[in-house]
Length: 127
Length: 180
Image 1 (cartoon, rainbow over the protein chains, first blue to last red):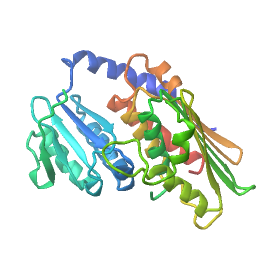
Image 2 (tube, rainbow over the protein chains, first blue to last red):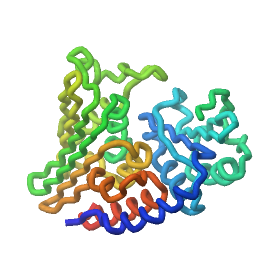
Image 3 (cartoon, rainbow over the protein chains, first blue to last red):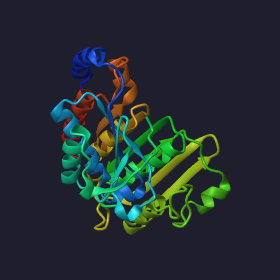
């Protein structure tokens, strides 16, 4: 019967603990993938996978990925909100995995909003 | 929804919105009896009789951002399309159980889809959730329980990138062994 290999997870846990001690605390950026029924139906799960891949590939330590419910603009899903500490959150619409990788590189890592994919820049910073 | 794994993700998001701390997903594929059953059990707020009567109305929702609630009506339709049915059990304070049954070989039964990706999406998006997943297919089974994972990880969060990446690899491999 297939089972998870908990021993492998324990080994990875030790290296994660080391990097947690080194990090100064707190995240620099938050990527929120909207997962309402509309988002899920239009491909939000693939966006989530793309974000996780980028975080793993770049070994990024200061970016957190979160999910939330429907943002209320169902016909523009999948939607992602990117929030950089100290800046207004930016909502991206009609996101695809390819666009998400571009947004990750240019905005999440590079700090530059990808205006051609953005809907709005809000003022309701959440952290 | 394209496949059942997306329906499952959607229903679990409902459970979380209802304040669930523990969600159990049980899938059973009985090829001999030609049935596939799916059960999602949560310990969220639950629903009273009044809400239970409205919940399958696509124009009823508890959300304030929109005026439709399509997740459960869509799943009920997916069951009907494959000669099955969906039932709900719920009571206030005691959580909700969604049971969906499908004729396994029915030409219109939606495929299960990437259930591994759905599990990872739930774990990554809601690392605090207690999740148990049981999948039985013709005598073989795969069980995932976040309680066991947390016991192995100690205080390291489940959604730490190296952990979630390793979990993804393991889950996909285990499901592949089960022929999923």
